[in-house]
Image 1 (cartoon, rainbow, N blue to C red):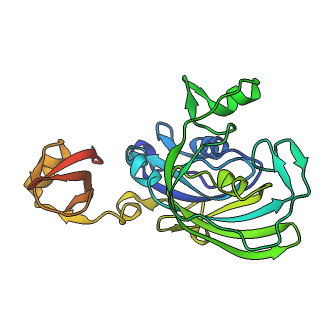
Image 2 (image 1 turned 60 degrees about the horizontal axis):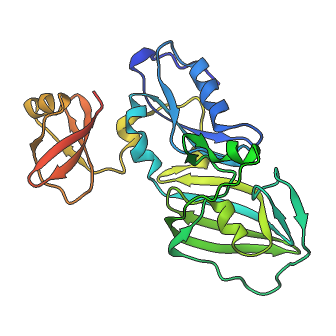
Length: 271
C-alpha cells in the first residue's frame, strides 16, 4: 500500500479488495497509517472478518458522504454448506452436523422481506454490539427489520455445497438468508459489488475523486454566486425529482442537496 500524501484536504474513495482473516477496522487502520497526518479515514459498510471483497474506504471529506455510499445496494457471491448449522452463520462459529441436505430446488426469497439480524452481528443493543453480548453469553433477540432482496440465484451445486449470487439492499444479512434456507451456513462469502463499485476495479493505491465517486447522484451545475451560497449551507433555487443531488460549480463538487419544493437544500457540504 503506497502512502497517500494529499494532506488533510484529501477527499476520495478507495475500492479495497479485503482479504479473509482481517476485519474492516484493520483495513481502515492500515489506510490511516498510510495517509498524511490529519486525514480522516472511515468505511462504507462492514465486511465480516471471514468474508472477502469490496470495502469502500473513505478519505477526508468523503467521510461526510458516508451514509449515501452505505445505502448503495450490494452484490455477494456465496458458498453455502448444507447439512450443518453454525452458531454464527459462518465457519468461525460452533458447527453442529445435522445431515439434512436438501436435494430439490430451494425457494429463494426476493422482494421486501422481514429479517432478524444474527446474534453475532454489529447491531447495537443498549449501546453494546450484539456480538459482544453473544460472546459474553447474554441471550438477546434482535428485532426484525425490513430489507430488500433484488436478486437471489443459485449458480451451482456439488454434494452438500451450493453456490448463490445475491443482490440486496443495505442492512441485509446474507448469513441469515442462507440459514433460513434450512440446515445451512455460509462457508464462503465475497462481496463483488457496491453500487457502481466493482471488485475487479479494486486498487488500494487509487483514490477516486469524490465527485466521481458520487456520480450515481444526479449533478446540478451552479453559477459562482449560487455555488458560494451552497458552500455555506444555504438553499439555492432548483428542481429535481431525485431524492438527493450533487451541487457543482466551476471549481468542482460543492455539496449534496435535498430537493425541497423549488429549492435545493445542502444536507452535506463537501467544500
